[in-house]
Image 1 (spheres, rainbow, N blue to C red):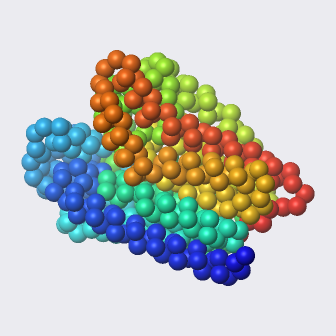
Image 2 (image 1 turned 30 degrees about the vertical axis):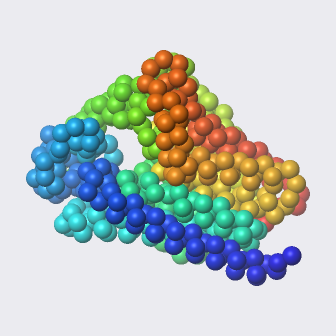
Image 3 (image 1 turned 120 degrees about the vertical axis):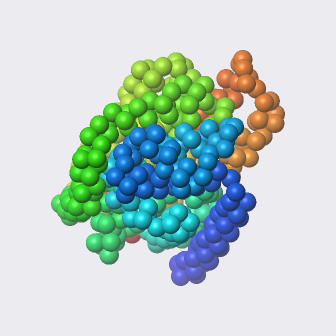
Length: 445
């Protein structure tokens, strides 16, 4: 059997190879798609909104965004590609807090800002994965490196769409490492604050965990909230002065994007054209049963209510106890994707389950095997390349658009991700409960 030092060295080599693969694949994808209007489309939207604000224009106005977009980046083409760009780039849906990050970038020329965004996102993804491995390596260095290498090779949507999730998720993970290791804590506070500013529905449950989990962690959560307020309040006041009706405008943008058949519609009307950028929330499951937002939203919230309630109770019980922390963070990563709108790039947060999986694997037994199975299923079903291959296969097998074959295709696309995330969240809740009851505590790195 390999020594711990040798296993850790081997794991590090696997991580380096995975990181090189991540850089190579994403560079190749960006190079191949460099002339497409859709490449980094979400960043274009954020950049244009920031430029609107710098010009003292309402950044939630569709007309303002369209005019600034065309003035900076040229006319939008006709056809389906142009329609997609017009919908995404001219519909601002982020809260005013996001402008604290996007406005400084919008002061730069677009080409430079785009390059900075890509480099920041890619670097944060790399750092986050290595820090997750550091948390897991003491228990299972080679296993955790293999799981994270798979993540490296399947994180293309974190880069190519330019969505803020790539940065927000990674910064959230970096903050988790800082808080658990008690190292570079101020960096962790700033990282979590920026993550919350960009996408609070991605990192909000992780922040809530630290708020609930004892005095030291609660202090970190409070400090993060203070930094978030200091960072974003000036931009919130700016928005309120410039666009006092921004809430109504943002809701109108949501209504347009979530309308039946629109790009963010979780229902079957858009299920066949959503592509590999899947929606991960439970709405996609319940909408197949009854395609009415009043039903599928309420059903999704109801299903999540019990596991989230259990998660809150277990988080409160971790006061001064570090043993189940990794399990609860793994559960938070999975459960946070389910009740509200998320896409597959948001679900990259599930790599937070790798340290929990490593801890259980080191203990052996049935829970170890189940942990590996559940975590591997979560990583595979939120991976980019397997989904792209699967979607291409079923489209080739039967390119159905109507009737029961179309319904089967929608189910095959809509059900796997949210259901496996639900199983993952429940499993790690059970693991956390067992960890809290054990007389011999699990070592948390």
